[in-house]
Image (cartoon, rainbow, N blue to C red; front, side, top):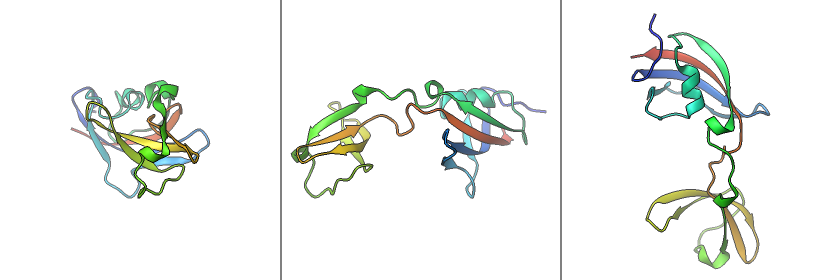
Length: 142
C-alpha cells in the first residue's frame, strides 16, 4: 500500500478546529485539498503528520502554533494615523485590509483597534499563536 512521502501529490479531506472546538476551515462539501508533499504548500506540522499515511487512513492531529502559522509577534502590530486611511473605507474592528510594503508587496492586515486619531493594524496571520487540530483523511496519493 502506497504511503504519502515527499514528491507525492496527496489529496485530503480535513476539518481544522481551534482549542475551543471552533471550526476555522474544512473541505466538507468541497473537493479535497490537493498538494505536493515536501513543497511547503501546507503548514509544516500538518504535512509532517501526513507523512507515511495511506489512502483511506484517518487521524486527528494537533499542530502547535510554531509548526502552523507561528507565534503572534508584537512587531506585526502597527498604529497608523486615521487620516492615512482613505475616508471612503468604513473601518471597523475585525475588518481585513491590504497594505503595500515599501518594496511593493501587498500584505493583508486586520483592524484590531480604532480611536478618533489612530487605527491599529495587525499583520500577523489570523491564526498566529494558536495550536490547531486537524481531523484528516487521505483521499488519494499520486
